[in-house]
Length: 63
Image (cartoon, rainbow, N blue to C red):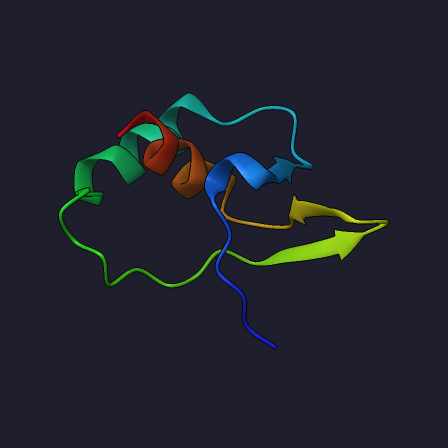
């Protein structure tokens, strides 16, 4: 089942983001483009967690 959640409702499981990786994501990430792949998340005990795509999620949060 697919679900759309606000980014503020999903918690990261990765504590750090590579500066280089984030810089690369920010080069191609444009807030006006809405055709990005969904970020994988899972639910545990009523909370949602991001399992991958932490740099992309942070770029979306910054924009």
